[in-house]
Amino acid sequence: MQISMFAEETQLERLSKLGDSLEKLKIIDFEAFRPLLENALRKERKSNAGRPPFDVVMMFKILVLQRLFNLSDDQTEYQITDRMSFQRFIGLSLGERVPDAKTIWLFRDTLAQNGIIRDIFAMFNNMLATKGIITHTGTIVDATFVDAPRQRNSREETDRIKNGETPKEWEENPNKLAQKDTDARWTKKNDETHYGYKDHVKVDADSKIITDYATTSANVHDSNKFTDFLTEEDKVVYADSAYVGKEIPDHVENRVCEKGYRGKPLTVEQKENNRKKSKTRCRIEHVFGFMTGSMHGITLRSIGIGRAEFNIGLTNLVYNICRYTILKRKEVCMG
Image 1 (tube, helix red, strand yellow):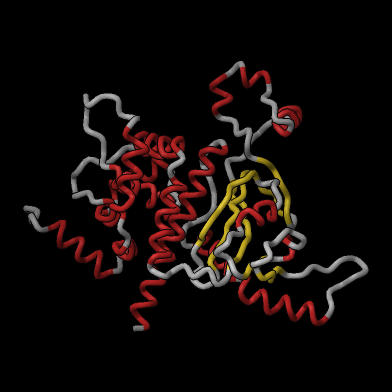
Image 2: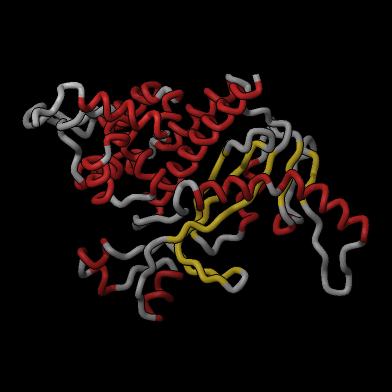
């Protein structure tokens, strides 16, 4: 049986009718990121010899796909090859060459080394601010764990890492050192043990868009980045009781939940005030809930703080992209 020359188009039309979720991202102008991406990668290509590189915007869309579905490099290569919806999203036609896992890893690692993700994050947020999406009428601050691949180190090795030292035997074995994360840390909270990093975020209360973020090791207290987040644009700040006692600028209204102490429990009035504050503060839990559910988890496969900063920044950016599409759909439905 001869395959129709219109088979690909017919199949894509059917995917659209069935509800291709990636089509919701068509409203994002990924081309706007091209200058930043090309500038970050330009110095990496020293010769025009060999096979031409893949388009930078297409490669960046692959990273978005990877973060949306929490895929490894090998799985990303396979899924793009297998799924027409993925090919359409990144701009490939059926039968065109798909970047392999090594190419995807190299592209992401090059961007990580150039620290470009924060510039892309800021650029996208500036676009949202221009559209009036980010209002700054209320700010929520919180942090969440980002689990990394767990290390199997001896107690002596762990103690050296905590002291900022690298075990001698690792230094003598570069291959082993490359597989060891000396930046991630263990910590425990509410009887749960975590190893890795923290994503500290500042969220616009109205839109639930992440407006700023910071990456630290997992053992750093949630409130560590609190004061750094507050700027002249902020009017009111919400946070849970872990942030009590942190300095707040005079122009920012303090709506941090109060904390009870041994021998001095919260009064009825304080509990009522906390309940009112929590109605807004809890909106940040929706952010982490979306990452955990719709984005298939907040985890890392990388090693080291540099790559963690890139991957956490990408997670926050992809969340904002998804959140923006949701807000635009609501806007259409309402009017």
